[in-house]
Image (cartoon, rainbow, N blue to C red; front, side, top):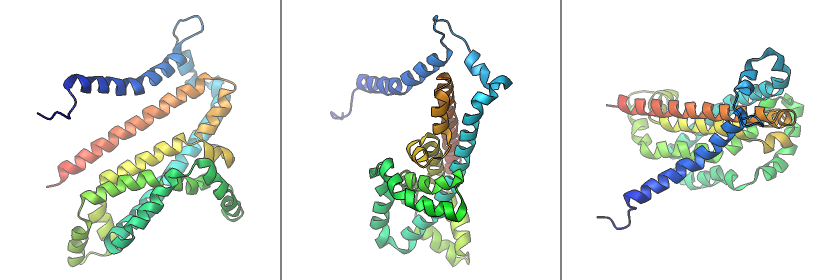
Length: 264
């Protein structure tokens, strides 16, 4: 018997506390959106989302949500098309650079968002003169923000797969490097790539500081504007955003399990 392992009762207590830590704020937020001042409950605030007369009040949120979804797609593209191939290259060809690359990739997590904005503001002035001030350009800053989380997700899959053997086997059969990366290595890194994409989407949907200081209209800044007129709408859309991320998490888990079952 392992004397260090917690008892069954201890595990139950820890599990209940963890579940309560997540569910109590969500339940409180849901209750806030359906409860009236006299104590009764109503779904009128949720039904108002489909009311055409409320379209003017919801317009800032829809614009911000659309911008955030575009930013999420561009950020995921940066992760999958730039970060992932670079990590594969470093692990296969330049293993001595791996510690330095890891340090650079994890560095943004230790830098506050306000400090990043101070450094990025002059860069965005040049970006505005070159390619405009579109909200999608914020993806360059978000690419830096999600870098540590995406790196750890992809690196975990790389450590679990023997990339060198897979690449050498494919090359010995005459496959070019694009084929090796897309058809041999990427399927073995599918779970890490999906996890990195999910984390990137969650970070983009929840980011406020950088977008606010760089004067971009995104989901979080739009909810701040709307909250001054209707405090219930931001709470409703927060729950919807969390539900959206939860569904994505289930999809990632399902696809990851499916890819493992498909392996011989």
